[in-house]
Amino acid sequence: MSAQSIAGSSRRSSKHESEDAVVVKAIEFTAWAKKHIRLIIAGAVVAAIVIGGLLYWRVAEQNRLDQAASEFVLLQQTAATGNLQLAARDMEQFIGRYDGTVYAEEARIALGQLYLQQDSAAQAVELLSGAANRVGSSPLGPQAAMLLAAAQQATGDHAAAIATYLRIAEDAELTFRRVAALEAAAQLHSRLGDHAAAADLYQRLADMAGEGTAEEQLYRMRLAEEEAKIGS
Image 1 (cartoon, rainbow, N blue to C red):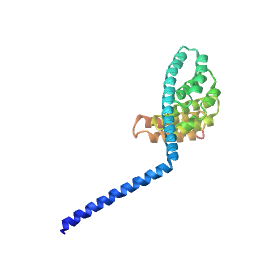
Image 2 (image 1 turned 90 degrees about the vertical axis):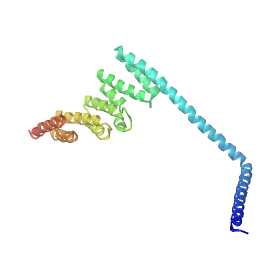
Image 3 (image 1 turned 60 degrees about the vertical axis):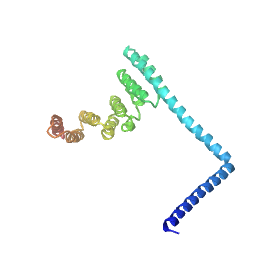
Image 4 (image 1 turned 180 degrees about the horizontal axis):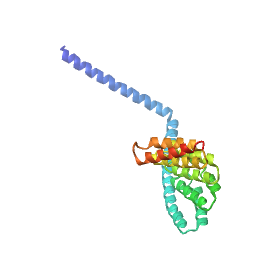
């Protein structure tokens, strides 16, 4: 027998063995499936329930967001009328209904501003409590935290206000948010007479500004002013 014939016979034999193995596996799986048919059906039912539940949740959540968007427009219209008490009441109810959505966060910020306009800084602090912890995790986190710091400052809790400003300066993603927070903290330190702390923050701001820029010159001028007040 030629080498070519032997090789061809070997390949056919190998092919048959492979096909036989597949058949054997199929038979074994069929037997296993018959034996565990209840388990397979139960697993399929659970999978269908989970998938169906996820789809239902996504649809319901999207409907909730759409409804929140529509109602938020009405809130803005109420606030525009100048009836601050009615606007504040409606915003409180809106936040309760749609808490966890971006629209509720926007309403919380708007309500905090209304509280400050009505000289209710303590209510604003309570409303915005925890905002400093969401600076890096929420798009509106830095804005809410800046408002919280302003409310804390209005209540006379200067230490808390400075801590909030510094938290924003550490966690905010956008540079202009960090700069605004550092400026506010430096100004507050200066008003409280802690000129050394104010100088440290202006030094930090100058280092952040581009070399030779107008911003750097401004911060270095303020730095010099605070250093001149130290010990005076």
